[in-house]
Image 1 (tube, one colour):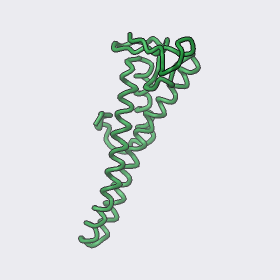
Image 2: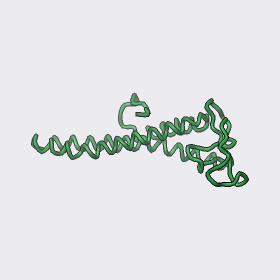
Image 3: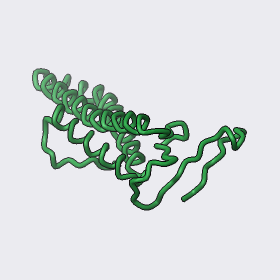
Image 4: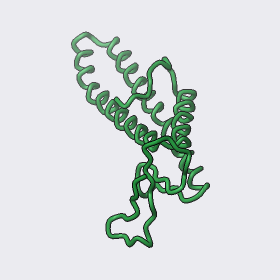
Length: 149
């Protein structure tokens, strides 16, 4: 366990400790989630954090669904245009597609950081979020995995 008991110029008696585990654990004492300020102090903050993580996990699937819908709309619109205009539309839509892709990559890396707390409760919350998100917005194949990139 690494001790991160101070933060900047904060005196030791006012700081909280964050435990960093590199092995799987169920321990929530001194658990900080991704940020120093996202510190689990009690059962209530643990439950609130788990709900937030489920929402984040579900939100990833929502971003994927937004991307799928945008691509479908572009393809449908391009099908109604002459070939030259369709190519122009494709070039213009590529920036938005790239932005949506970048958001997905950033989001997936953030979820990876959540998982890398190596805390069983956090890992379960990530999986539940993926489950809920897919139930709500999963309009395509489930074979697409949540990958870092």
